[in-house]
Every structure is written in C-alpha cells, then in structure tokens.
Image: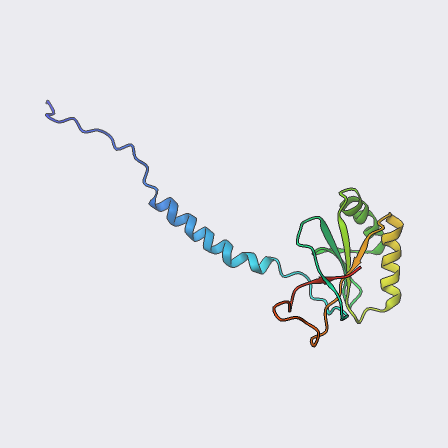
Length: 149
C-alpha cells in the first residue's frame, strides 16, 4: 500500500478551552475578592479631624470589639497575655505600624489596659482609629477607614 500524499500530524495546541477556563476563574476571583476583605464590624467613636488610614501593607490593626474580644487584623486573640507575644513577633520584629480601633461602647479601662500591654512590648508608635461625624464628612470620603495619632 502506498500513500500518494503523506498526512502530517497536527502539532498545534488548541488554546480555546484554556482561555475559557481562565475567563471563568477570573470572574470567580472578581466576585469572591470583595467578600474576603470586609474586616471586622466595629462602631468607632467619631471626631472632627482624622487622617485616612495608610493603604500599604506595613501596618496591622488591633481591634477591641464591644464584647471585649481582641483581634489582630482578622485573627482572634484568646487572652491579653497572648496578645503580647503576637505583637512582639508580628509587629515589633517586622517593624510594622500598629493601629488600635475600639468600639465606642468598650469601657475606657479596657482600652487603657490594652494600650498598656502594647507599650510593655515596646511599641512606641500607636495610631488610634476613629470616624468623622456625619455632618463633617467630606463628599466621597464616606466609609473610608480613618486613623489619628
């Protein structure tokens, strides 16, 4: 048997299924990403002049919720003694800034106690977060996290 025309193998890669899968993954990540960065629900006290929180990754936020639970970024801290170890490893050794946000219903004594533990670790720069009052908020700046020194 002889073949008059030799057929060659097609060695091209069909990228259409690959592009379809990548577009589906892109859509899934675009929908899921905003849900992952919601943060913790805290009713911050209000003050007239606050600065916008820096957007770089060189800071961490310590949250004291209304029920007294502590969170370092989104991770729960079981007790205040454990907090000192986390602050030493995650904030001081990595030279990050620390911001404290406490619900306005948290007693002042608890906030001062937390600040005392922060100072005991050796963190000297501590930012305190607050919101602007509704009547003093500038247009377009509503909902942005604020920080003050």
